[in-house]
Each structure stands twice: as C-alpha cells, then as structure tokens.
Image 1 (cartoon, rainbow, N blue to C red):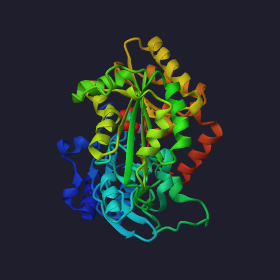
Image 2 (image 1 turned 60 degrees about the horizontal axis):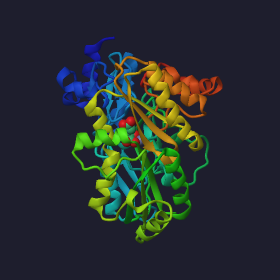
Image 3 (image 1 turned 180 degrees about the vertical axis):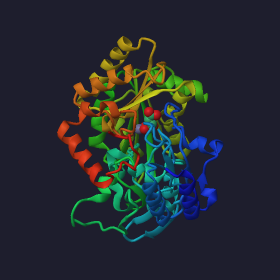
Image 4 (image 1 turned 180 degrees about the horizontal axis):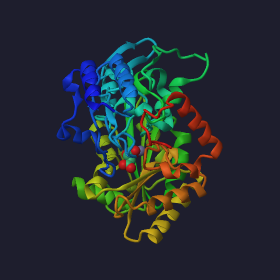
Length: 452
Ligand code: 2HG
Ligand code: ZN
C-alpha cells in the first residue's frame, strides 16, 4: 500500500487537519470506554459530510486500507476501536439536525448528533425521542443505530431499530444508499435501514437517519423499591405493568453494585437497611402518574421499603443509584462486561446460577449485576480477572445459552463476544449473515473482525 499517496488523497478530500496521524491525538480514538480493548490506527479520519465519507471509503478501498467506523466511542464490546492499523472513521462531525417535521413527529439526524442534542431538539419542538440511556451526552445517533442500542425505555418504545424511518448510508465501495426522508409505510423490498441497525459498522457506514419522535410525557414519577430477591422484583413488576400503563422503565440492581455506587459517589444509602434486590421504576404520562403508581405500590410493598419521587431533582437522585453503576465499576477496575438477555421467567434462576458458576471458575472475581428488568437484560460486570482472561466470559455465556438466552442484549457482539456467537446463533443463521456481509463488503473493508 502506498501510504503517502493515500494520505495525500485523503488530505485532499478532508483537509489536512482532519487526517490525523499524531499518536497523541489518535490515542483517544484507539481505546474503548472500558479500557479493555485498544489498538493502533494508521489514520483517524474526520469527515464532515456524506460525500466526504463516500470519497474516503472509495480511496481507502482502492488502497486496501480497511476502516473502523466510530461515533461517540461509548460502545463496550471493542467494536469501534482499530485492531490492526485500520483507519478510524470518526463520524462525530456529521452533527446536523435537519427537517424536524412537527406535524409528523419526525426528524433527520446526522450520525454524529449526540443523543442528548437530539432529545433537546425534539423537546424544543414539543416532541421527545423514544430511546434514552446513561451515556446520552457522548453516544451518537449513528453508533446507536449501528449497535441497535437499547437503554432504559425499550419496555415502552423499543430499541433504536424501532425508531428508524429512513437512513442514509455509504457502502464499502463509496456508493450511497439514500432512503431519506423515509416513509412510515414503505414495503418496497428489503428493509435496509432495519438491516443496517445492529450491523455494527460491518455492512455500511451510516451517515444520517430519519427518526420517529414520540409525544411528550411531561409528568413523571420514579419509585425505588427494596425487595428480598429478583424473583420478588419481577412479581412486583408484573403487577405494575398491569396496573400502571404509563410504566416506561424497570431497572434492577443488587447490594454489591449499590455499595460500589455509594463508595464512588458519596451518595447516602437509599434505605436504612440493605435489601436483596432493588427495583427502580419510572412512569411517564401527560397527567401526573404519581397517584396511579402510589396506589399500585400501596398494596404490594411495605412503605418503609419504597421511595417515590415526582420532581426532577428527586427523580434524578433515585436514578443515580442505577445510572452511576457503570462509572462506579470502571473506577474500581477494568471490568469484563457481559450484556445478556434471558427469557424473563428464567432470569432469577440465571442470577443465582451465574454467581455460583463465577465462584467456581474465577473465585477472586467480583460479579456486579444490574440491568433492565423489564427486558430480561442483565449486565453481568466482573471485576478481578485480567482483561485477557476469557474463562469467566465463556462460563457466563455458556450458562446463558443453556438457559435459552442471548449472549448480547443491547451492546452487540463487537470483538468481545465474537468467539461465542455460535452459542446462540445456529449455523444457518451465521451463514445467512456471512452471505449478507460477503455481498455488501466482499473485500472486508468495513470493521473487519467484528461479529464474525
Ligand atoms: C447500562 O444499562 C448500560 O447502564 C451499560 O448498558 C451497562 O456498564 C454496563 O455494563
Ligand atoms: Zn444497559
């Protein structure tokens, strides 16, 4: 590969300031949020428009230099960092929010728009966006679509794929697929936006998306409940789903995670005594959901074990116990992160079994579990084992498979789960996926080594 010639061509496309070779500037693009995955890139490329992305992919393709697309770099499975000198293609400068249609409740967002910026724009126009997650200030729309991000409101609105009306994406050879502005009803062949959602940058580079907005639900109520076990939490949740139709989040965590959060943040303990499991629920509606939530809780839980919050600061205080898990864990070490789903009915069985299994395979490991109870999605974080020790990962994922779950609920496969894909995808599934990859990216230019 003639790197000097490629660099000159890339500089002509992007301007010299946006073809980064300085290792000190490249560094933050070359390590993932967990610090477990890192690698070196040849260049970090920072296009600001779709035609630049197209020209960059054509140039890199002709030179034989693969690219790793990257958004806010908040992924947790090593899917957005280079592995073998690829170019990092940072989409953060594609940050325009356009064509917000206040009648239809739709907006077009560039790949580099942060979730927080999109939420702000939607709210300013009298709408809201259906997906929310803790890394909202850094996570970008392109990355969130590429990983089909979930977050805390999947229970009510579904993951990113469900918000997609249309997409603009650049294929490996530089050709542009433009399904914008997108139509709510459009059965004219294969659903390419849906296919690119969750493809983790391996099929195309997403540059813009047409997204569905949701009507605002300005009145909110949050409850934090202390319960004996996960099984009890799921029973309460089942009843709340029936009685409180405005329920939109149902999150769980356990005493060991809460303790880490308290140590890290200095927050006061929520209850005077410890509980076996904590359930945080949020309801959101046009009219005040507090009476409905309070009434539903009254007959089901001792008031000493329930905290209810209506105003924004009190709600945020309760959410902090859940949302600050990730940063508290990261402050304590480099975790192994296993984002798994189980059929809801088997979640309590899994919770007990995973603790026992980890005690056998990695006695020094500290498991910290938390997640999205309503979705059957637990985040099994493990502190202690060396970053390259895969034994705990294998043990947890084999257990998940044996209980009928999935090895990734919402973070994706990346490189972290790649060796385990066959645990929960059958040979016919994997060969169909490989055929799609081969058809769209025959030379392996887009995020090589991710998923397969
Ligand atoms: C969350 O639910 C995120 O907070 C991060 O998906 C999970 O840190 C994790 O393992
Ligand atoms: Zn999550």
